[in-house]
Image (tube, rainbow, N blue to C red):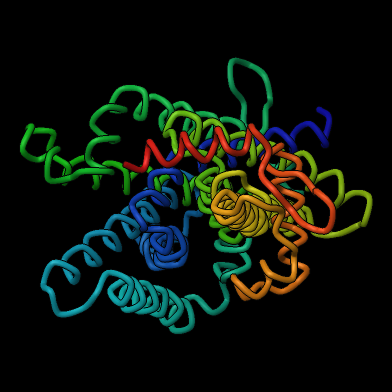
Length: 364
């Protein structure tokens, strides 16, 4: 089987499964929970290893890690509800404690066993083609089976409970009043996050799964205000990051997972700077245009009160503008056809007077 195809499809499945549930994590302001789960599952893996007497089969490890992930969510929720600590502080308390328990157990009882962080946390997507299983008489990558099932599970959950998830995310009080049980939906969503994070460990590791859970949805959040489009964009950003990241990693002979996460980060940076809704640079440009629009209308109103062309020096003295800003406001008004240059001064055009009269009537 083609190695490139296995790695690329594995990354696409991870990014898709992650984006589906990660979108709701971002909207619920629980992005840190993905990082907490990805580290706090370590004691669950150690526990599964102990209960199976040293068997490192995928299913016991998956169940043990998922159990630890759910325990993390439960403990964080319990600490938050006590009112003694904030949610982010609760996350910062729980996952280091659980992770430390796993590290302590390994250091005390399994020093000679290859059950360290390299084995269970960091993963390597380049090894995905070598982990295979037999299905319907054909040998296929194990990552395709696990991640494919997780993708279908996450997609089915969102399609089945889309209305309830949407309402409980944006208005949990109303969801509870309507009988949608937002608490049950919350734990179901966190369960899927746990299974998704754990299911991707062996294939891609915790670093990439955290990146795919948060960065594509956060990027989509900057690009749209509609939930269905946000989910689609998050999936699309994940796919682009997978394809471009793999291509760049091969070209530069760099870490595949690291390059995929880097490309996802670059996508977020582009959205952060240039998003038509919330982009840093586009917002500045929009504010500058609005400022010039107001200045041009103010200039028009001032000129409309004079029956003669007004010199620019008089305008500068009246408003206290600098010459550069006056030139920009004048060009804005000239382009709109609101005023004209007459001799050594400025005066409104008939169109400008009409705009001024209309604005005055609406203002009243």
